[in-house]
Structures are given as structure tokens and as C-alpha cells.
Image 1 (cartoon, rainbow, N blue to C red):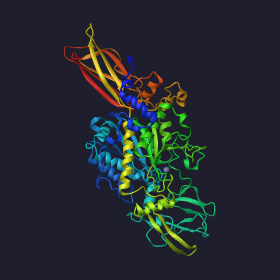
Image 2: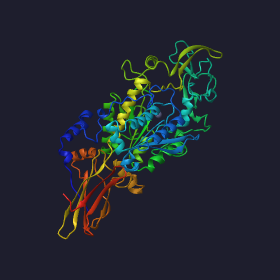
Image 3: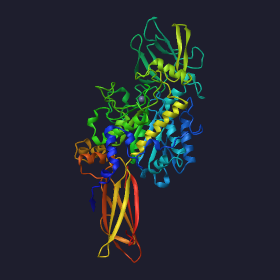
Image 4: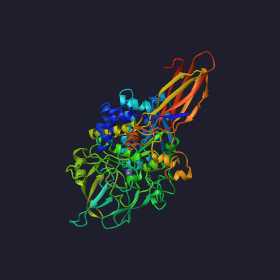
Length: 612
Ligand SMILES: [Zn+2]
């Protein structure tokens, strides 16, 4: 038996007026400071030691070292960390994911989970150190920082630092400082003997605006050249090279898929970068499987680097305007965007649909869209590690500003200065440029700048994790009846920000809503997991009510704020009733447990006869 009561608690609490104003004004500082809302200033100012995180590390470690560190952390901190081998790369490198939660507060899957990953695009390097930093900080600050401790006690973090280690091995090992550097594995040739295969540039006419660019040691009369990531480029005009196809010389496969077009949502066979079928690559398949197997995950975050001098977030939908998303789901993204703008001022949250590049066209097969549209969870992409500095404040980082940043702030460590060289075929050219990619990508930063950026990312991700739904058994009361039985009433409430179904999209694709959606007709595998309530009795028996019941969903505060304004009917709290009869003379103990796959679990035990 379920009775539903409308909870007015949040509607009358003074914080709600503030919260509503904050939503309307986008002023995060006005958010109510509750245990559930991680306010960024709550985090202990953390200055990791070099042992925990090397902010000056360059070049970055390769997969074997990352995997070894994940396993080492799991060995050293068995109470809060476990290492999982979730699959292998095309070239057989192991993909190790770390799971971080306090196992004393319950199994990992009994708590709301978040999935963080990086490295889909190999020359977009910032995600690698950023994810390693999140792992180190969560573990190092557990028990030290109350905000981190609470999150690790009540959430599960799944972190895969590198989705695409094969391509990273190619990109990063181009750097001669890497012990395994093999120049012969990289396209081009070190003509000037400085130890680096970089680029050559020259102008055919002195007044040409653009340089012609080639990988050092390759020839312009060749119709193609291969970049440091192994992509084949062709010359389409006198001065430009365009990517010919996705062939990678190091796999020998034509149409090497783009790991960022491989995901099932809006996957397009017409796109040569999409692969033979969704998740045809072992790495994307491993992620999809690991994530789908864990039904507690409510948030998926995937790091890229657009390398434009700003750090921004990409949200769904990539194929439709925001109005096509249910307003409740959109509210979450609005809130996240406000949080990101608060943490990293001037850095926006966009969707591909609205960005100039995306206008009028859509991109298919993107991971965050897959997470939202297929899994019914929140998905987000970070475009991080904005390289360079916008010295003149015109909104973009121009090549001379990139050069100035690299020389003045990075000590010139990611690129060789351009030096004149007398080329046997081309004549006077210059040789130099970035170490890791002929497309001009730089790693994000080193030292203080890296520390500042990783700190911002960390706080943002902790804020997102803090918004999880949290099912609580807030009250169990019992009262004796005249027939010798006891009436037991439990109040179950969602004390988190997100509703227990996570997204309205999850209801739609599960066919659990009357709203039209593919799931409604197809009855596809369920993506929403309702709240289940169980009762266990010692010394007595159940005479009315079910011992195991599905009470549907409970609204989160974010939805409730909106619902309250709309006068809607759904609730954040429900009560469940039973009648219990003692079977002997001893005490009768009643344990009520509430749980939902993505909203955690909670329980309370009372002894009948001692009821309040
Ligand atoms: Zn990318």
C-alpha cells in the first residue's frame, strides 16, 4: 500500500526562494548551501605534493605507467579504490579503469555513479593529466577534505584516464624525451638533427599570407603526407592540406574510425569516420559495455581539447535545439553551465547544434549524445586545456599569442623554435613547431597554470557528482492497533537534486511515460530504475502490505523547484504502510530499506513497542 503526500518542505524553506532566483538569474553564489549542493568554496584548498601529482610532468606517461599507477593505488587504498581491466585496445594495450568509493558504506553499485574519461582524440592531450589528477586528488584527500570524503562515501567514481592509448603512444612517443622513442615509427625525418621531427614551413612568394607546411623530411611533390598521428593528408590547393581519409599508417586500415563518431546515437554509415557499425572499435565497445553494465551511473563526462584558448563544455543535443529537450533535463544543463561559468569565468557551455561550426548540420555518433539519448543519463563533453592566452582580449587566441604564451609562460618546452634550414629540394625553409602534432596542438600547460586548471575541472566534476539523487528512509513510525498488530509507516524521500529517474529522456526511452518516444512503442530495455522498498521483520510477520515494492520515482530538488512553480503533481517523498503482527513474546524488529539503481540506498530499523 502506498500513500502519497505532497511535501511542501522545500517550497516553504527560505533557501528555495534563493534557489529559484539563482536559477532565473544564473547566480550560483545564491544557491542554498546544503549538504547535497557542493559549493565550490567548500573544498579544502589542496596543494598536492609532487609525489601525488607532477604538474610539471612532460612528456606525459604512457598507458603502461598509467595502468600500473591505477593498480598501485588500488593496492594501497583497498578501502576506497579498485582497479578493473575493462578491455584492450586494437594493439592489445590494456584499458584499466579505477573505481573510487568507500566500500565500507556499501558496494560500488549501491551508490549513484559517475563516469569520467579522456583521450578519445589522441592529440587533444589535456584530458590525460586532468583525469589522472582527479584520481589522485580523490584518493589523497579522502579523510582530509570533508567535501571529498562525503562524496567518496556516498558516490562511486569510475575513471578511465585514456580511451585511446594506441594513438597516444604514437603521439607522445614522438617526443624524444620519452624513453621508448623510436624515430623510425614516426613519419618524416629529423633533417636538422635537433632530435625532433617537427614541421617545415616556407612561403613560395615573399608576400604570401600563409606558410606552406609539411612534416619535416617529407616532400611537397608527394600527393600525400602523413602526420604525427598517422593520418594521411592530401594537398587540395597550393597552400592547404586536407585530411584525405581516416587511414592510419600504423594500423594499415582504411577508414580508421574516429572514436568520437562511433557511438550509437545518430550513428551514420555514410560517415567514413563512423566505422563499420556503432562500437566496432574495441575501445569504444569496452566503455559502452562497462558503463551499461553498471546501472548506477547517472553522469558521463568525456574530455577533449578544442585548443582554442578557452575551456568550454559541450552539452547535448547536438542534433536539435535545446527546446527539443524536456525542460527538466534542460534545467540540469543550465545549472551545470552556470556552475562552470562560476568556476571558470568566461568559459561557456555550448551545444554543437548552436556553435557556428554546427549550425545547419549535425554531428552523429557523439558520446555525450549517446549517454543522454540512449542511456537516459546526463552526458557532457569538456573541451579543456585551452592553450595560449588571449592577451589582447579579443576573444580568440591568435597564432602570435600562442607563440608568446608558449615562449613566455611555458618556457618554450612544447615546441622547437623556427630555425632557417637550407633544404636540398625546397631551398630556404624554416624548421620548428610543436613536438607532438603537426596540427599545432600544444599540451595544456605546466606548473601553476596546470594546477589552476585541473583544480577548476576537479571542482566542476565534484559539483556534478554532488547533484545525484539520494534516496533516504527519513522516518519509520509504528503504532499499535487494537487487534494486537502494529501499523508501520515509512517515509521515503529523494534528498538529492536530480530525480530518481535521472532524465525525462530515460522515462521516454523506457516506455514509462505517455509522452511519445521510441521506447513507448518498442518497449526497449528499461533505462529508468524506480525506487524499491523492502521490509524485513524479526519476531513478527507481515499481515498487510508487500515485503518488496516498487514505489515509482521521487522528484529531485531541481525538478521540484520547477514543478512547484508549475503546480505539478509529482512528489519528492512517498510513504509506505504495512501491518505487522508479533509471532511471539519477544521484541519485534522491523527494518525498512529503500534503494534505486541510480539513487543509492538507505535503511532504518525500529523495534515495535518502543515506537515514538
Ligand atoms: Zn576532440
